[in-house]
Image (cartoon, rainbow, N blue to C red; front, side, top):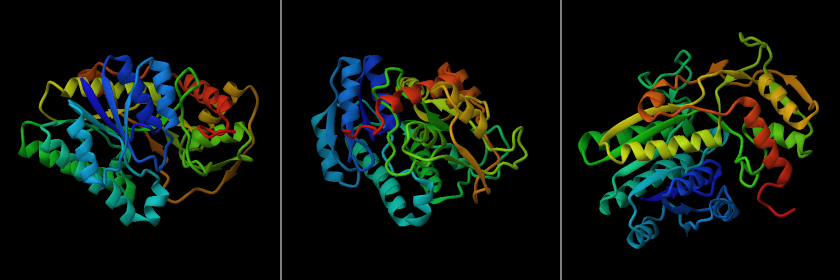
Length: 338
């Protein structure tokens, strides 16, 4: 099947493109390269020994997107494209709603016009908000508490309405937790612009000398070691989940929701110490006051994905950190030239 991947040069997108190619699918990537590098696909092609069709296109440009669908017999779409920084979304909500929601509506209009109605959407566990108790299950009410999360929630609502109105649509909503790690080759990985927003890429930049030390926000939570608990998932496990989802919904109409996570809550210190084991020495860190909005604990109940997709995580926290460190050590400046 020919799968079109929006945002396919990004962190999760590029790893999923690799998994799709290795599973025998043909891939067309659409990306505007605002937060990613074309180099990621060059390396994906090297690893897979197969080529990818790339279109430097923005989802806000419906005419350009139409041209891509006119040129390629797309069978399904995996939709990653979107702005994703929570803090930035609080400062620039209009930009986030326009880019993420309007871009998705354009994509859906073009898909419908071309009789392509199989879609896997990259949602997020942020849609659960802060009012649910762990572990998070798909039947819970959702209620994101920041503009980024609300764009994901609104897109889920749009897709649910489309699925209810038109039985020809095959839709998967994947709510995933904290992706980390990199391909075991060290050739592709996470390359955030500016100061990383997430824990593991920040630790990796401390380890490689790009940051002075790790600030640990809050050491007095009601958790085993006082720091926040999160559900970390290896990006390759996550990517395999996307391939399993597109294969599943391709033959099943309706709207399906799955958590993709490990079901394990790991603390900040758990992650820091695992990364120190990967590096081989301790890393500088400092406790700081809590940040507004941080939840004490956040992890998935992934049992539905196991039951429906026969999917579960296979990589341990140590393996996640080892692979992430291999990528960062081999690419201290990410995809940019030294």
